[in-house]
Image 1 (cartoon, rainbow, N blue to C red):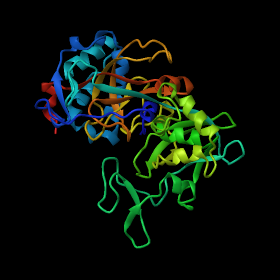
Image 2 (tube, rainbow, N blue to C red; image 1 turned 60 degrees about the horizontal axis):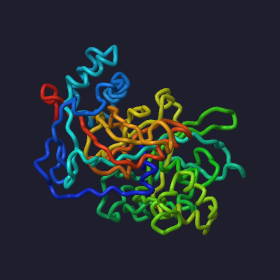
Image 3 (cartoon, rainbow, N blue to C red; image 1 turned 180 degrees about the vertical axis):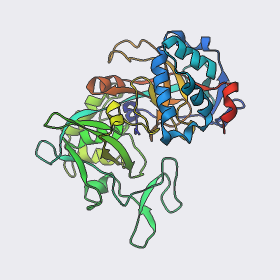
Length: 399
């Protein structure tokens, strides 16, 4: 599970609420209209590598953890198991046979005017140590034993609005979980142990934002970390705070610029850099994951390894896992900072995040390492987003 694309540091997507027309399954009309399209309307569709997309889709069909979300497409998954495609052409035929594309038009937006907001994310690969040292001072923490996670989009009447986790107090009642500031000050006591130590607070913060990481130890081995929960406090964009306060001009904001500002302004108790991090009260916990599946890639919220430029994070309160989406835009997806070429790919909804809200909102997974991070950090663009819903012959299993 991921938290937000880097571009979410700098921008917020606002959805209009008036309804345009009666919405088709599965969205309420107050959020969006789904307008039927032909596959020939999807720019570049015929040129995509559909075998890559099918492999990502088939992974989600196999995931026991995502069965509930896949109720709407279980008939399509059954067809996928009968005769796996042996070529990209056969995979394209599979998608065209079993799905129908619908363009997602947020309420109040005009069609064909790039109403979908796109960001990117990645898996950091960074040095670290299993023990604390002057070079590795900041811990990434395991899930605390007292954390009561209500789940994204859920709340409890005794907790403040927007909080999705808590813990039981001395009186036995549910109470708010410590926020980032309180955790930094020792608010978890011995409830959470360090999994690994990384260079400094901003490196740990960026791992929190991405929701997973691979930490290279002194032995040369990789310790792969997976998302294990969060303290339930709402996410806040520290990049947006810097821009809004005039500390960094919007046109200069980047991942590197953000890190440098925090380091330049200090990361010790009371320093401006550390205080900025505390303004995002959300805090993420991790577990060391040595499974064969995790070695393939970070595990998304759907319970399957993510595939570069085939997996996207979506609003899980609106879309079930496993749905294919056609993403169409002009974004710098091949080279950071370069002229934005055309992008058109079939991608699978396999992840989510606290900043990924709304029907026409997608966070594109770019892969692992610095190169992927440089590309992902440059994505804050508008485009078009099409959901592929089961064709009428496959829709009988829809809830």
